[in-house]
Image 1: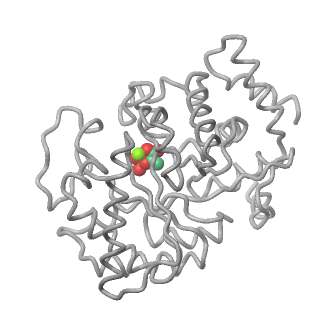
Image 2: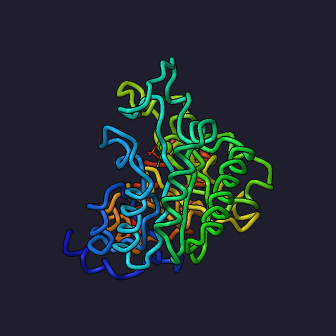
Length: 324
Ligand code: PEP
Ligand code: MG
C-alpha cells in the first residue's frame, strides 16, 4: 500500500469523474514541514500556532515568533500555508497565564474570544506573521468565530496591524487573505454578508461535530457515539457548502475526519473541494478519491437519506465494495 501511495504522491487529486479536490496537510511544528514533500500535500491547510506558546515558560517574543513563521514559509517553498491564530484558553492554559476557573471550558473563554477581549497577544502574533511573510503571500484564519461581528473585529485588528507595519516602513506581504474557522453551528446561519466579507471559510470539524451533537470531543464515553456520516451532520455540512457557493467563498474542511478516506469521500461528494488532514492520510485519501466517482457517491448518500438511515456509512461502504 505504501508503494501505491508513493506512486501517486506527485499526482494532483482528480476523482474518477474528473473533479479536482485539493489535499493539504495540518501542521503545528517546524518539524512537520518536511512532510509537505514526502506526503505530496499541496500546502498547509491548517498550521496550529499553539505549540510555540505552550512549550515555553514565558510568552514568546514577537521577533522569535516572526523567525519561526518565516522558517515555516521558507520550508513550504511557495506552497500556501494557512496560519491559524492562537486557539488557547480554558483547557489549554498557558503556563504563564492565570488559569480561568470555568465550568464548561470548551464553551468558555477561548480562541478568538480571548484574542478580542485581551488583544495584546493577538496583535503581537499578527505583527509576527506580517514580518515573517515579508513580501510573500500571507494566509491567516481566526479560530472559533461564532458570529459576523467577531470576524469583523478580528479582521480590523489585522487591518490595524498592516497599517502599523506600513507606517514603520516594514515590507508588507504580497497578498493577505483572512479566513474564519466555522466551528460553531451558529456561523452556518450568519448573514450573507459574512460569506461575502470573509476571504475563505474552513470547517473545524472536531469542534463543529462536538457542538452539533453536544458531545464532548474529549469524553471517551460520548465522543464516538455519533457518526460523522450521520445524515444530520452531512446535511448540515452540505448547507455550509451551499452558502459558500452562493457567494463564491472558498471552503475547506480541516478537522481530523478529513483524513479518514470514507469521510473524505463523502465530504467531496457533497461538494467540498479542499480537505486538510494529517500528512499520513493524504495517500490513502487520494487513492480512494482518484478511483471513485463522486456523482455516484452523492446518489448513494441521497438514497440513504431518503430511506431514513441514520448514517450513510453502510450504504457508501456497500457501494465501494460493489465497484471494487
Ligand atoms: C477543529 O476543531 O476541527 C480544528 C481543526 O481545530 P482543533 O482541532 O485545533 O480544535
Ligand atoms: Mg477547533
